[in-house]
Image 1 (cartoon, rainbow, N blue to C red):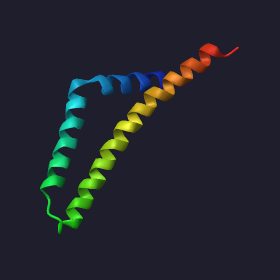
Image 2: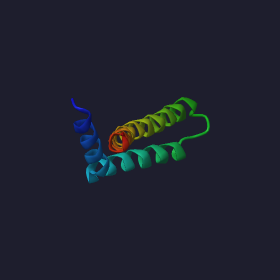
Image 3: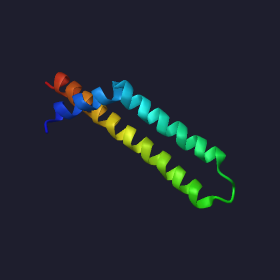
Image 4: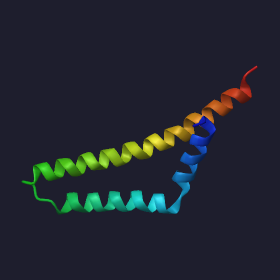
Length: 80
């Protein structure tokens, strides 16, 4: 898979309304579960925290594909 193709797919995902809605809904549901959990539900709270971190890492990974592609293009433009 070419780098340009990966970058374009990543951009498309980050701008896709269903993708955005899915991530926002998952994050909201996880935060609601966390807020509704009791202090003694340590294992459940840890699983929710891990899920939130994973969701963030997925979004950051896709964003980094776009940013890396943008940076590579700029480097090619300014190369002498």
